[in-house]
Length: 292
Image 1 (tube, rainbow, N blue to C red):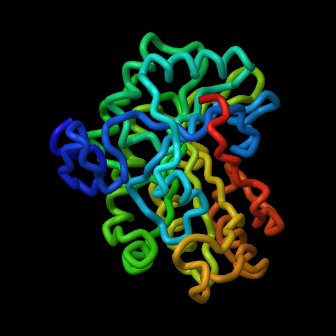
Image 2 (tube, rainbow, N blue to C red; image 1 turned 90 degrees about the horizontal axis):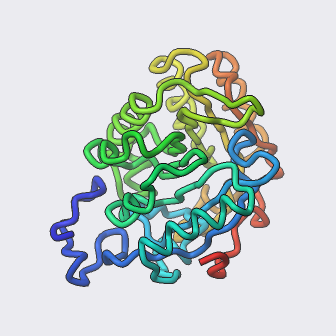
């Protein structure tokens, strides 16, 4: 695809000619792991696991990224669209509640054909929230559950940590489009999510005000109960900022509790919380080309 404009970077790389985009990828589909994943939110992982496919590359480049090996280290195996469809079917045969596309946007032209015909389980679009509305419209009717981050409300923090000072308005518009496509959350008879938007927010050390602004926005913008909110405490010092205060430490219990108290005050009870003890590397997937 010449002149790539899939993500908000609009880097214009001619990836079909071997040029690497901001995401670090050409147009050859590359996957690092495909396996049942049990560490998503409960109505996504369930008892049998989510069929998570981790794509190599990323258009965001967060300074605290825990998956640098695949996001910017180019680790992964080149596969065809046909093989991707086979992977989906293999995960479903293993009992996956859904197919979970992790950081997929920069490979969307290669992924879309693999979603046809419609799979017998929901499709989850798991992304950093920094998405173009025009690109998301290509997914209408093909994605059932959107699982975006809403990392920042403060432009200076977004610029410092992700080189994306426009993150908040871009992500807010993207999440609006996601909600327009799939509507309020709905569940099946077993309590598993069928449709809807689950917004993740990772509390960062020393950045409580950023988190409170994110919660303020969500409380004002979405009808109560229409979305799910997952507020995470699992920050582990990683990436290029792991030696830079305050990002060289986990989130304190006091910081996380301040965010949770605000969440309850705003009436944002629909969703999920984490114990501060979740800030451990044991939750990181092992990228060994499993299932690829």
